[in-house]
Length: 342
Image (cartoon, rainbow, N blue to C red; front, side, top):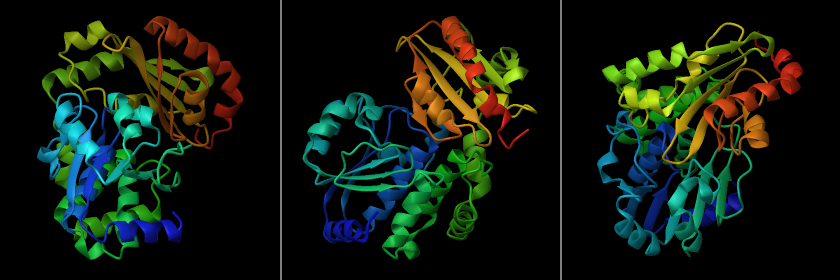
């Protein structure tokens, strides 16, 4: 973000405004954490602030401070629409293209509010009045910390803000193990703990609140695991019937792809999940080292994300999607071999 843009935003926020904060469809920890951290910060300055998500999110995010104030566009459409239409400023967090908000895309595009984008994904669309984009940062939550720091307001970071920022950094770095986790990230985390983020409770709320059926679903997913050692690749499949058998709830497959990536010698991992409601196969990709799953997803599965974590989709059957995936791998054999991970 340029100095001129920052000064313009600072001037905008000098007096109370009607502000809407929006994140992407199917929000994850970084989307919810960044939205609520910014919400709490802006409330310090007496702005009229509303967080609106395109749809619901997993139960393991519903403990976050301020979560009860979030509106869900798909079930609270009229109220959400009225608030968006009255907004002076709309912050778009953790996404950089309108289509990532699903049904909200049209109303966001029509809105005449000033748009401020804060995001760390690659190749942002040019829709915002002011854009703060940095693909080198591990999470949008860390960018919110930097945003607050630009205002020299880290003194205002209380336990609620610290907790929300910690949540997003933790989940988007895979509990601080991804390559995007830098020394700066760790210094910020230390400061958040000093500000009141209870790291053990946050971790437990996200990762240690499994239902019995979720564990059984994980067992099914792991039994479906396939390894392609020639290409240092592993993948998991989950059909709709398997999801139903274990009473699938939103968020139950969060992080499952990382089990495939955790295998010794594996560089590239994927999970293919049948979604009959949308008539697609939802795909998550993960990688180690230099192999870019962002580029792979963009090239072949109408997706994208980060170099080591991306998503995509397929309108083929799950079997045909897996076949397509497998037949693409020979073209990437050299890249996978040259990854610094072994």
